[in-house]
Length: 123
Image (tube, rainbow, N blue to C red; front, side, top):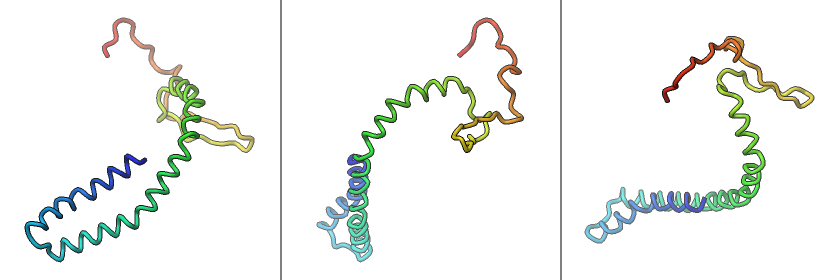
């Protein structure tokens, strides 16, 4: 997150660096001065939000890593078993906690699909 906020800040400040160099050559117009004040105020207002977002990301990182380590293999197996997610309706959670994945009525079931042709397969 620190990299993202640093990049965002750099992208905002780069044009002002060019403006500052031009200021030494000529006087600034009121529009340029107003834009600089606007963006400076915007940066001051956004700084606490960026800091809070960085803190939140740092707090969540261990939990996300743990989730990925524990659930990664199970999700990979599930993705291998279900070939086309668009063939299913949204999941339904029953009162007892079971989750149902229903195939859409207009979609063919795996046993009604034509058998693959024997021979070479072009990839």
